[in-house]
Length: 200
Image 1: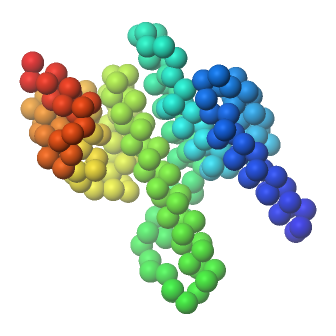
Image 2: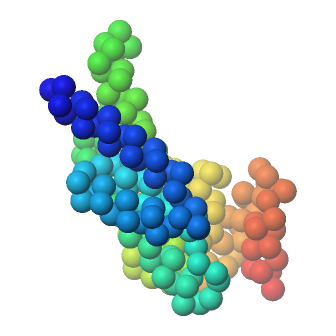
């Protein structure tokens, strides 16, 4: 209905406004507005994605306590992103071709592609956060979940592979994963620092 379309349009404007509040100086305003919108539009994927982005970007000054709180926020937010997607429907979409002449199907397919990208990003960040937290059982589960959507042996996911191997004490395999990623982009300083750390 027109009323529903108007409601969705107003929601989208507010979600866009949230992006501008995603700064340290306005983090409280961001958190308040995000909570309100999530209460009104439960399960709305862009809101879950915004929570994950905020969790990743709005990190308190580094202390062990703050790091743990931050990482747990990342894990929780990533879980909300995944929970906002119908994974069964997404899997069905991944297994079939779309008629390029069916405009509605093409639009739906593009939306599914965006949902898949959101799930992959969320699971990728969840793996890294869980590895830093040392939550091995949850880490294995998250890594397997990521592997359901991507080839975790791909260089693109070497960072996640290295994190998993390192968390399990398999340092040689972690180093191999880091080296694999460095082979495609040797200029990344964090990777170089991690490589040095693994060699010590």
